[in-house]
Image 1 (cartoon, rainbow, N blue to C red):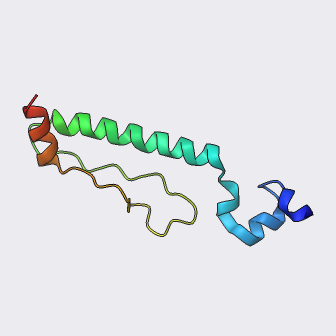
Image 2 (spheres, rainbow, N blue to C red; image 1 turned 180 degrees about the vertical axis):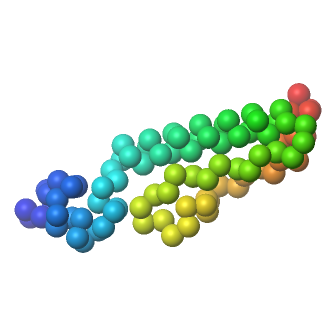
Length: 88
């Protein structure tokens, strides 16, 4: 019972969960907000670039994630983005 209420930065939780113990809801939400801001900036830049669009930004690495570059959401290609904005 006492182990359930240990703080996230306790030595026991760090030894059991590793880096996962350091990330709570606030850290995950902040990383998600930064990732969305970076993608929004990338979309704006890609839509307003005449030449080759810049590379997509890498997401903030999360603890416990094997590959930080994978995402369950599909992303649009630069050609699809250009076609979308051209149709407006």
